[in-house]
Image (tube, rainbow, N blue to C red; front, side, top):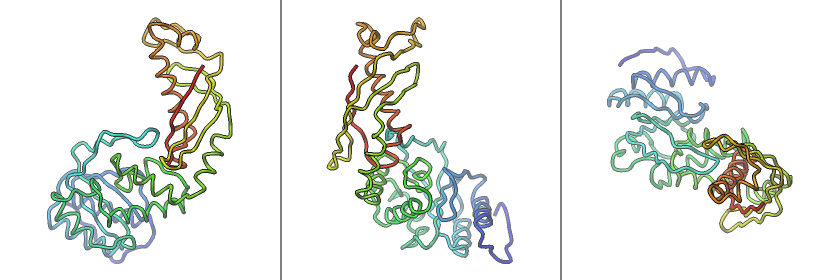
Length: 288
């Protein structure tokens, strides 16, 4: 064991519990770092090396005493696929994962399942009903306690790192919100005019109409780019052009149209937070 910390008794405060768990991780590996923020009931860490069987057994027993279960993941699969406005791929830099969860959420011995069969059944990479049930229960707890939204930090804490897992999390969120999701969409898009400033673009849009497709979980949005917008040609000669002139330019017009669409989508996802707050994605149509 690399480190040793003796306990006369365990303090139930969140701060002391987190500190205890960090020492347990130090005993397992040379270093560790949290992915996302730490919560008293759900913590995900990247650790620097492969723990010994002895260290894992000791860690499991000590975490059991604290009321936690451990999931040790040897080969986490992290893809490059992303969801617009929600999650970015994580670079683990060769590290492995330890997911530590309060035992009240666990229906099985996660340490045994996660460690002894990790090579054959990579955790969180494929569908697993037991683990998904735990993830869903914790997400509902987060939504009840913190705020009714999905964000990157939440997903990372729950070891939801890949595109298919994000899609499942959005499904759980829509189920949680129920009809309220439609009300939230209406409240987000109620304001018709918006100013967009991004990557050399400055322009205003007016949302003319939107239609909610509950079957495909999308919002079809139609908007008009208002007169007076400008774009700075950053990679060219530094000119600032009227946006309509730039769109009609034979050489760069097609690229300008694509970038306008990207700017509007980014704004709706990142600034208006439509996906994070509802679990719905958007289909965009715009004109000048």
